[in-house]
Length: 478
Image (cartoon, rainbow, N blue to C red; front, side, top):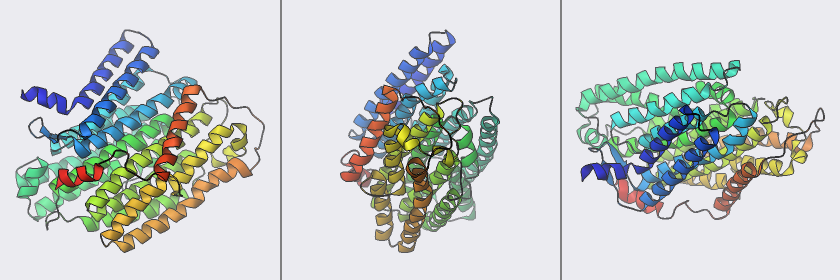
């Protein structure tokens, strides 16, 4: 039956949506935050298992060709769910210590994840829009969670206003594309597309909305303020799962709606945006004293590296981007997780780089973990960040984009300064005053250790997280 086929195709999203509804009801009937947390974990684990299983099953479309399932979309869903799961696990202790442990937080995370899953599986511009808005509305709420802090209010307001502005571009672009082709389905648009001014204008406006969600320059203005004002573990969720879903959706649009034709050759545009994003993100990160703002501009720079793979427009390029998304999820959640641990200590300010002076010896495990994640973000072997960057730049070289790859390598080298600056304060600077920090909880510490082990493993054994992905890409899209 068609409806059973449709439900099965989007089963990870249905599981997460059901968990979100159950979480809302449990919170409404005052059943306790522990019950809400347990439902969230169970829902995400179950959905992740289904997504991994679907990667190696059949591929096709569902809901009247509105979504695609199996293969690469399932891989994107798995990365999104992996990021959401680990962010939720490390959020419990952090939000409790910050007096922000509300059941609604987990419900918003679950519903945002549903939007991300729809986004990563979109085969129609309407589905794309619904996914991106479902995700964004929930993230607007999470960004303003710290109501007592003016930075939290600023984060939510700025994210909402700029997000609404970007949505206008996105909708107008969809309208123009529909006017030019008479379709909203990605394959049907590709079949009917011609390089008319109306179609090109629509694609341009659509890309503006996408680049905003990716945090690419010059549409990055919201990123540092939102990252700074949002609770740190939820910032990690925004920076990883949301970015993974957006990039997978972008791959779907490039491969299914904008194939390599006169009407769809946007390589030069992506190259320019990639260069601006890498250069601006790294240069501004150099002068940041606030650690979260530094990681925000670092996130912008990493979006530039990912765009290098998309600019290549080859199987190798798309594979590199998918691998990098997984690698970025590991090391970024880990880095934000360690920062969240330090922020859990009430009465102490760990916002500036200088405040990390001497911390490497106070809780050695956390200092080592942060060092691992920072080394990986730099792209130093034998960590997964090096492998991810190697795949991306190698794909660009193979596609003949050698100048783009050279700029990417130079930009990555610049990032050494601001990442290792944190480590210099951790181990080579003395603390300005004496203070005690909490001992990390077993679950919190174990979660970060798992991320660190995976960061090292996929650096030493540079294989795709799930075997057969290259074959899935080449067979699925072309």
